[in-house]
Image (cartoon, rainbow, N blue to C red):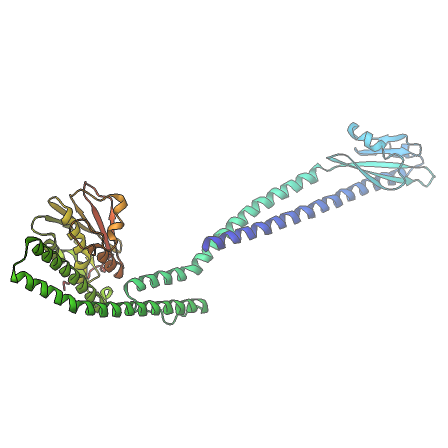
Length: 433
């Protein structure tokens, strides 16, 4: 928008400067024509006055005529001549005029023929010449000055428009950034009364209305999630209890016992997902206490298991503004996925970048093909014995608190996942829930 305003202003000023330049050139041309005419009239009047001062015009004008004059008698014969050779042919064409007449024999000279009569009855024609090159040079200088001035005006108007629009739009951009941040992290915040003019007040009211809608949508989603989770948890608890009881009773073929173990594992995985959804519905994660990544490493090592080593490199300022329970639910599926495919080692690096904490989890397994980087976040997609719900749920929870989860290029042969979460304010205490 700012660029469009600046470009429109510059184009408008360009059109104005072109119109002004054309107007100046027209005025200068008309002025030059008038000045040349006045000079020619003055010179012709001077010659005629001298010719009338004596008996014979030839005798009166002898030695008293400046360059650029030619006088003809009634027969068209030259009486006095101080014209340049290149101008004489044009002057001869005016030798018998009966009224004032102009002629331009070349681009740089104007001729004016004026018939006259002396008191003694002698009549003839005086032709005077005036070079137009000085006037044309003045017009060119004026055009050049107009172009230079126009360039400065365009530059100044562009800079001025850019500065004014920047100052005018800066509050709008600030309010938009705040609204985006509040919608992701603190939907309870509002602009309220804005005293900086009716336009910004109207914008604040509109943004507050949108934040209200976002808050209502989140509350509705949390309520629906909580209700569905509660509805699913009761029968799922019964399924888990029944399967565990069947396992305790023993019996059955090995295939049947393996099937029971798989059913029990899937049911427990689903129970964990429901527990996560309930926790997200109960807690406003974006209002949680800050948590340092170090605080959840023990739980993540338990997720990785005993057969895989979890090697962590966590920066001292890698604290996120979400509760520990939510941080575990974001990172646990990523670590679990890495442990499933790792040969022996899973690395976890956490560092602060600006207003975010970047956590990267990388394994030393076979790696992940580029075309599968987004597909692994689709519900139900699983590689080795999983339910296919962990990574999608991790991404969803991270997005809820204003973060993201993505598969990125690995440094080695394995797969690497990057988790980005909002960083805790500087100096905030690290609290584990």
